[in-house]
Length: 254
Ligand code: NAP
Image (cartoon, rainbow, N blue to C red; front, side):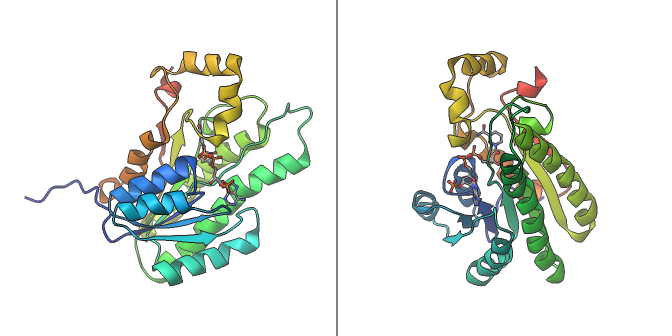
């Protein structure tokens, strides 16, 4: 009898946005360790990720793209597909956060966050899915959501709106594309040690408040997120559609 659960990603190609650092880098490395070749997309150099991925024996292609600009999306997918081959797995990881009281929050901070965290995710997913559908290939899309997909938070109105919207968008795309062989799911990280959370960790009061609420009693390390991405990208998750999977040290269970 063959093993009914398959986690290998051998022969697959994954496009990971924001793969130069933080959670995106950790996800790229985890997917590569499971056998996938990686296309890293983003604004910054990806030498560190490239070194880690190639050390695992996988191919790595970096494509420069500023996801705040709509014009970047189609050339990104075209370059990735042409140079690396058809994309099997898309990880929408790139994201930004802006902090200010809701009473003072600016339109610029609203638009900047919504453009990268939500608009780019939708149109990049559309560009990748159009190719999967046209070529009758199965695919996986994994969106990186947040605890703010479930909760309100404070002083991050556009971030909360974008990540709550992303949970809804994940469900909508799952409903539309499941029958086309594309699994769309999300991972909702709790509080992880990355640039994104540097301001929170540097504020002793907020740091203590957050740690006190995490049943696991510590901030997550980026490497602790990769397994969820491998699962959702693999055949083991073939019947998983529209899920938002928390990886949060128990934060939501509290
Ligand atoms: P990070 O270290 O700040 O990384 C963010 C990534 O997004 C970087 O690679 C960044 O590239 C990229 N990016 C930002 N704007 C971009 C743009 N316009 N075009 C292309 N790439 C862009 O943060 P992180 O914590 O790893 O965050 C990754 C994802 O996880 C985000 O969606 C974030 O909201 C989410 N998340 C994080 C946590 C956490 O605790 N850390 C919790 C929940 C959700 P540059 O380096 O060039 O800026």
